[in-house]
Length: 340
Ligand SMILES: [Zn+2]
Picture 1 (cartoon, rainbow, N blue to C red):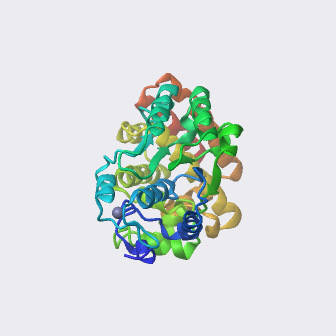
Picture 2: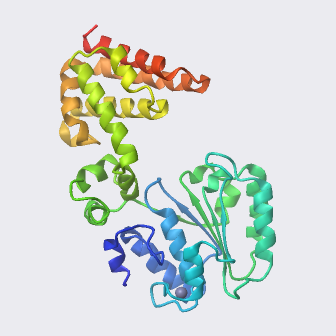
Picture 3: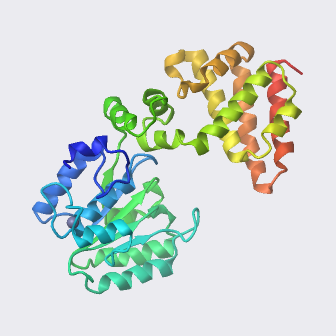
């Protein structure tokens, strides 16, 4: 399979790992650096979530650890490639928080430092992926800094971060930084259309995801699609005057954080519809709802509700009763819609 074909493969987590189509230029530069023997020992991949940063990091790991790499890609057949696929390559080290949202601790970094000081078990490269790099607490970052200042030969560090500005400047300066940008629309849509079912619209989803193709795939998953549909139906019913208490009961298992995020982004979209028209709308799947809201709510009302829902985020920390919390939000919306 050539690099070009990677764009039409059915999955981003394909085997062997290959860069995504919009990462082709970075990949070309890396190949050149490898050929010239000047690939920096620490790389920082940054960019918004949903651009395939980890896919690119995995592609580099596959290429560096492959025993028979081809001109532009790993062979996918050697025992090293197979070990990577199984997730048990002894020279591949992944440093992540022990649980999502937690910090990467200094002991975890020390552990990695010890391992990279030993020679590679399979005689080639050692590769360390740190994700998300901003999860390292200060002690962890300092421990890593020491290792990066005195690099071991044939040891490659790849730091992946959605928020590189949260990393200590000293650490950033030890890495060669590679920001990943969203693809142009045609490239993003072409890749996305191969990941979706025929009924799903790549153009709408890519726009709703802010141009980030992997985020668009996520938006299309049933786990996210069903709650979105339920919320949409509920809000449409309320816009026609349905009782907020009854509607709150339908939503009682809805994660509150997600509910607030949806409400705020849909209010913002309605405001964009008002101000700049349909072209300004981010997620056009809700356009019929936006059109109704646009007629019933003034710009000031939209801004007021947005401010109130923003404020409601703070109440989430105190574990409110789901149904009561949702009922309160819906009653406020009903009042503004003029159905009180
Ligand atoms: Zn291989």
